[in-house]
Amino acid sequence: MMQTVELPIWLFILILFFAVVTFASHFLFPSVRWFFRRRMERVVKRVNERLERPIEPFKLARRYDMIQRLIYDPEVSQAIADHARRNSVPENVAFEQARKYAREIVPSFSATAYFGIAIRIARGMSNALYRVRLGYHDDAGLSALDKDATVVFVMNHRSNMDYVLVTYLAAERSALAYAVGEWARVWPLSRLIKAMGAYFIRRKSRGDLYRRVLARYVHLATQAGVTQAMFPEGGLSLDGKLAPPKLGLLKYITDGYADGDRDVLFVPVALNYDRVLEDRILMAADAAGTRRFRARIGVVTGFFVKQLWLRISGRFHRFGYAAVSFGPAVSLSAHVQTHGAPDAEQLATELMQRIADIVPVVPVPLLASVMRDRESVKCDELPALLDVELSKLNSVHIHMPRGEISYAVEIALKHLSERRILRTEGDMIVVDEKQRFALRYYANSIAHLKR
Image (tube, rainbow, N blue to C red; front, side, top):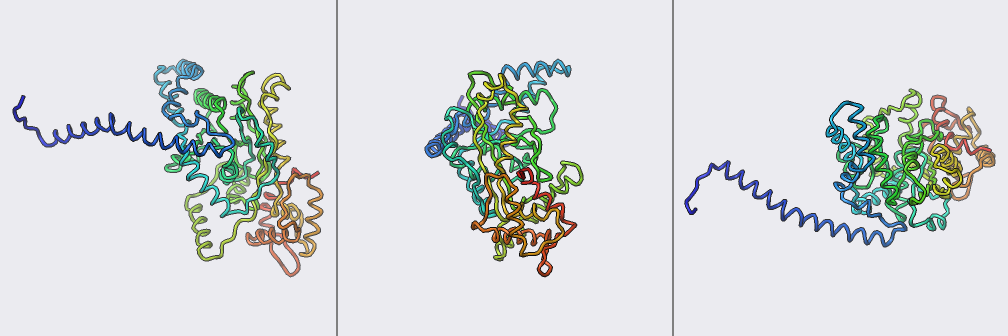
C-alpha cells in the first residue's frame, strides 16, 4: 500500500485532468450555476417591479428543461412515431431529429441580456437613426389589459428595425418573444437573440415533425402567458404595401386554443418610416420577383462604416421620422364566442385590417404620395398639394413636424433630394424617372388610407 508507483508523465497528466474535471462537475460548476441563478433571480425581481406584465416563469425555465418538456410532450411523441412509420426509420432516429428541432427552437432567455443590453441597444439605435414618435395609442387601454391573459403584438413588417423599435417602445410593459427567421442563425448573433428570448423558425420547412414541434412550443409559451410579437405578413414588404396575412404562427395559437384556456389578446401594431434602411434591397427583390435578398456583408458593413464616419465628422443627420401606433386589443376568447370556434383565417384578416387602419402618416410617404404620378411641381405649390392629399387620408395619426405643413415639406424634400429621388431645378421640384419606383414604394405605405 505504501510502495512508490512509477507512472509515465502523460498518464499522470491524464489522471490529473480527470480529477480536475470530476471536482469541477461535482463541486465547482453547481456552485457557479447556483451563484448565477441567484443573481438572475435578483435581476428578474427588480425588473418585474417596474414591468406592467412581469416575466413569466416559463420564460425563466432552464433551456435544457424546456427542451425535455417539449420533446416528451404527448403530441410530439405521437408526431415522432408517425414520422418514423412514414419514413421507415427507427423511432430513436426520429426522436433525435425532434430533439434537434427543439434545440433549434427553444431560446435561453436572460433578463440581464434583454434589459441590460438589448433594451439599451434598441433605445440607442432607434434614437440615433430616427426621430421616434408614438402615434395612435390607447395607453389606458393597454395598461388595463387582463393581467392573466397572454398578449401578442401583431405588426406590419417594413424593416428589420421593426424588432428594435417595438422592443424599445414596449420596454416598460414586458419582455417580448419574437419568432425570427434563418437570417439570424449566425454566430454570435444567434446566441444574443436566443438570450433575448427569441425563437428561430424555418419559414420554408414542410416537414410534419418540425411543424408539430414548433406548434407545441408556441402553444406551451402562449398558455404560459409569454408576451410575444409576430408579423402576420410572414416577411418584409417588398413594395411598401401591406401584404395579405399568412396564417403560420397565428394558426398554431388558434388551433391549440380550447374553451377555458388562458385568453390571448392580440394588439395590432403599425409602423411607418421616412426611410427604410434596407429599401433598395427590398425594391430590387420586388423588381426581380423574388424574396432572395442580395445583401452582401460588405455592403452592409460599408453602409454602417459610412454612417459612423459621417457622425464622427459631424455631418450625420437622422433618417427622418419613425412612427409606431398601437391599436385596441382583439380577444381570442371573444372571437371564439362570436364565431363558435377559432377561425385563424378570419382572425388574421381582421387583425391586418386593424393594422391598416392605424398606419401612421409621416412626411416622406406623404410627399411621395403627392409626387408619384407627377413629373414636376412648383416649389411654392407643394404645401397646398400636401394639404389636399391629407384631406384624402382616413388616418388616426398624421405626424406633422411642428404642426406645420411647410416644415413637413421641407423635411421630406430634404430626404428625397439627398437620395436623388427628387431634384430642384430653379423653382421646380422634378422627379428623377429612374427613381420613380422609390416614390411608389414609400407612397404605397399609406395608399390604403385614401378615402
